[in-house]
Length: 95
Image 1 (cartoon, helix red, strand yellow):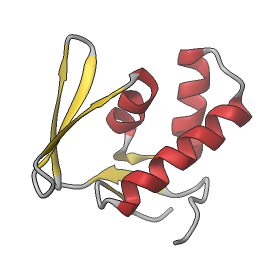
Image 2 (image 1 turned 30 degrees about the vertical axis):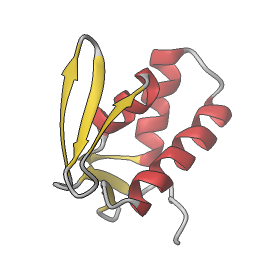
Image 3 (image 1 turned 135 degrees about the vertical axis):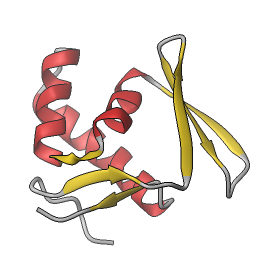
Image 4 (image 1 turned 180 degrees about the horizontal axis):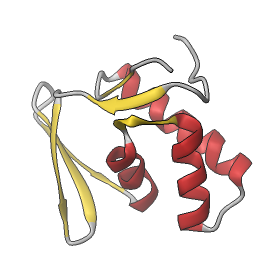
């Protein structure tokens, strides 16, 4: 698998329907017949992966909104995005 580059733009695919319920992002992954509840940081990544923002821009937003160390957020966000890409729920759309 190709690691995420900071200039990659990320976008959600159509493999999951989603909505926000009581402040929590919930995904319905139809192929797996599963509901996935995302924590606040993961949910925010999902919301921001609209095809307009790069990995680096998403990490910057998360660092400001969640008041965390940018290096730790970048590492954790990249790991989460990699898992979503493996499942086909998010895709890279280039730089």
